[in-house]
Image 1: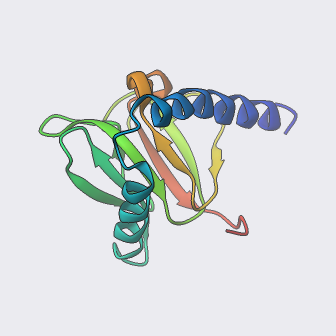
Image 2 (image 1 turned 90 degrees about the vertical axis):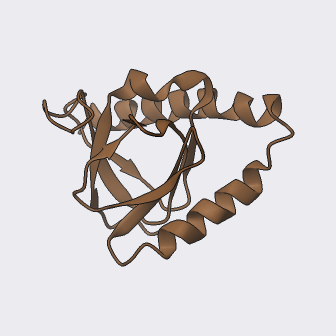
Length: 139
């Protein structure tokens, strides 16, 4: 548990650092409307859908609990933006099919409403895919 808090803080700090500049650099992109669209898309994805994802080519999809969420899809490119409509606990995996074990081997809690913007293609630094399960965070 002593490792959990610093690791979570480090993960959120890294994600925030990379996500914040994108909104400023690409002021012509309506990030708020994309957020709202992805959040609604996620909520409409069914009871087990926890994240709405927009890939580089504009393709939208959702992922359900336990389903592998690849950070890159051959036909659509890298994930550009993800909006979590439910609170989950995720494990990053070294392979796009979510095999190879969790990296790091500590699950990361994510609260509903969080958005991740893939500025500078940083998403692949974290791994190649994730699997997420529901948690009891209050959002």
